[in-house]
Image 1 (cartoon, rainbow, N blue to C red):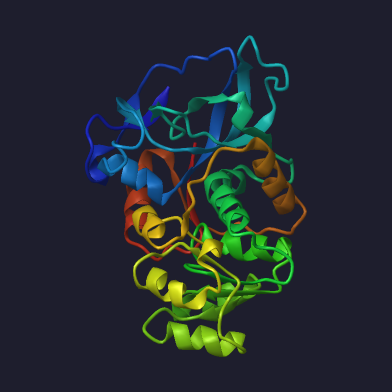
Image 2: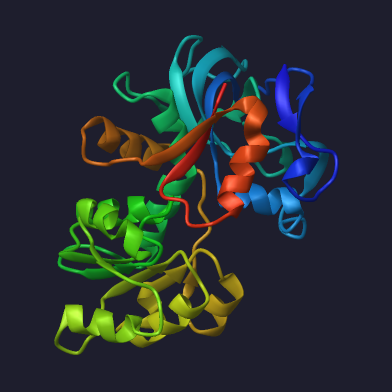
Length: 310
């Protein structure tokens, strides 16, 4: 099969399109012919070698944890899936080597959700990791009925989903930080946009009124936004960061690391099919142009998601 792979860690240029053996199918695995693979900032961090102390890595390494495609075959212990089923998954395994940026990928059946026929493959591939990060971070802070929730980087791949999911979970108001050029986009998702910068604390306090505090914060930005959030959240136990685990722990804040969850993935994609969750895809690239996709993400300020098509 053709796959994007690299044999050393480094910048985007270490990746190339290669001919590699087809994946093995474990007894509880499903072999998926990939139609689209989401690209996430974490893929760039893996490629640069930043996660070597967290997960076992093996070279040559095929990147990618998001997939949407069609089942080709199933392992001997798989009973719920059959060839021809259209599926999606956050396919992060315990070892980093056989990712989704390939013509086919073997995925544990416990990670797989069924793709509704009304949801296209590109949209489905953009959803799993970002959607699960968004949902699980909101659950960590207990976002729910009547809450005022602050979402940082509300136009980004995770943030634009968090805004919508927070409303689906019952939040009364969502305030989203974004650059001014994305304010209308953030507003269209159901959030009240505010600009980053030194005036953020006062701007949020003015929007909220009363004591100027919010009920929950999900931080997808880090840096100054993290520091400002400590001043804005009523209870630090209801703040989470997906970008700065060390500082989160130092300040009594929860760090969120998304876990594969087929049930939650199914819930999310069913929301998409029902027209209740919008997945913004900024740009697609063919598999062979994965380097361009990584460079786009590393350039920052990407609205929504980037997806490779196979």
